[in-house]
Every structure is written in structure tokens, then in C-alpha cells.
Image (cartoon, rainbow, N blue to C red; front, side, top):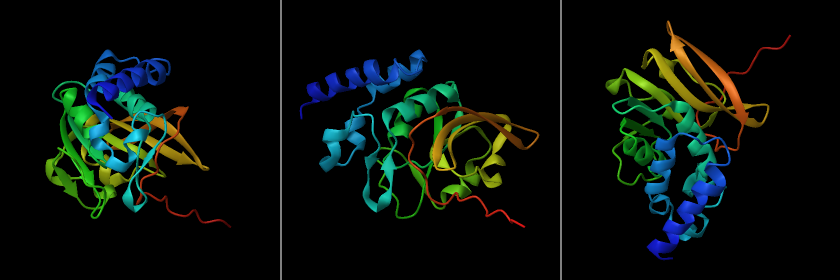
Amino acid sequence: MTEQKHSLMRAAMVESQLRTSDVNDPRVIAAMAKVPREEYVPAHRRAMTYIDRAIPLDGGRAINPPLATGRLLTEAQVAPGDKVLLIGAATGYCAALLAEMGAQVVAVEEEGGPESIGAAVTRGPLSAGAVDGAPYDLLFIDGAVEEVPATLVQQLVDGGRVVTGLVERGVTRLCSGRVVGGVLGLSSIADLEMVVLPGFAAPEQFVF
């Protein structure tokens, strides 16, 4: 597929998937219209690049649908110079978008996880974050988790922002919030299809 064809498909993604679904931050739109998503998709999956579905990767992982990425970026309210802890770097697409928007990105991907393109990545458990780079202004979890662990919350500045997906009774929901006094408060914004990240299972609740 030619570069021109991909460019046309990228423009169609922006108009038909993003602008119509509350992705209304001009800087998010500009970044997603510019960064070539196809370069972050495995060659044998590139026909799927601009459809509104998760794209499977090796090892059971996947890249979020474009709408999930766009909504997360919109809720994140990224400002130039923000120091961002990105959890679930995958192939590096979201890191590239954040960098395009002027953020300083520290990306984390698990050992043996997807190979990231064009981004320096810290390898290790996703739930551990990257303590050496803390504190961060924004925690950006690029997928859905059952809970946001305290290990990640503690790596944010007071007032730091968080965007993530949460898995609740089998449904993935877009959530955002802030850390105040070391405590994270999250609000659910919308039910949204997102990939589920490994390593974030909530502890089992004791039942009498």
C-alpha cells in the first residue's frame, strides 16, 4: 500500500472515527493526523491499520483501537513539557503521539513484550512503572486494568493526572482523575473498547 493511500486512510480515520466521537482537542487531532500509524503496525497486519478495532500483536498483546487512543489523549490534557509515564508502550505508537504533542515520555513495556519502534523503552513489569524517572505529571495507561496500583500512583507529583481504562465486570471503561495527597480519585467517562493489559489483576475479595 502506498504512502499516499495510507495518508488518505489516516485522514478518513480522523474525520469518521475521531471527530465524531468526542476527540475534540485540536492538538490530539493534529498529532493523530500526522503520525503514520502504519509504521507501528506489524507488516502482515497493515491492512488493519486504520479500522476502528484493536490490532493483534505477537504474545497475545494488541494495539488499542484509534478511538481509544484518541479519547485517552483528549482526557489527558497533555501540555508541552509534561513528563509522562506511559504504561504499555507496545510498538511505540502512543509514545510517538505524546512526543508529537510536546511531552517528555518515559515508556514502560514488559520483558518479552512487543518491540517498540523509535522510542526508548524501560523493560520490566508494567505495574512497577519507572521509579528512576519520577516524579511524573501524567500517568498514561494505554489500555485497561483491573486496578491502578499504588506503585504507579506514588510516582506522580501531587495533583498529577491519570488516564486509563478500567475493567469492571468484563466491561472496559475510560477513566481519568488526579492524585491529591497521595490518593487517586478516578471518574468513569465512557464505556469504550480497549485492550486489557497484563499484570494488573485486582486482589480477590474475601467473601463470608
